[in-house]
Image (cartoon, rainbow, N blue to C red; front, side, top):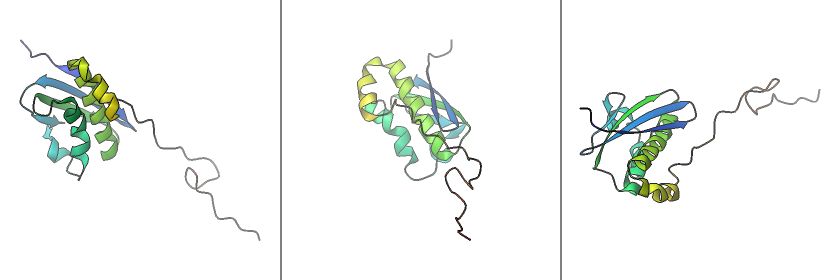
Length: 130
């Protein structure tokens, strides 16, 4: 029989992460790789592990993540949100700690579209008087 897992979906910018938590010893796999190999950038692991530390489940759960789309920053934010949502499903009493830490508020910032007549979203061509 398959072991029971708790799933959370996280999104940020163009990235989507599907996170599965099972009771375990702290194994963390992202797209088939170890988390430190998938996110080698300095500070990314701190962001990803922050909901686990606030929820008190640092080495108590095994985490499996499937993340698609976006860049590194978006994927890190999506994984963080997915972990927080899955932890709340697993142990509902950590909801207050997750909210206080700001882990379950989705970051709504996305890339602004380019407007006609401009070079980028807001950069206008140089003004010339004559």
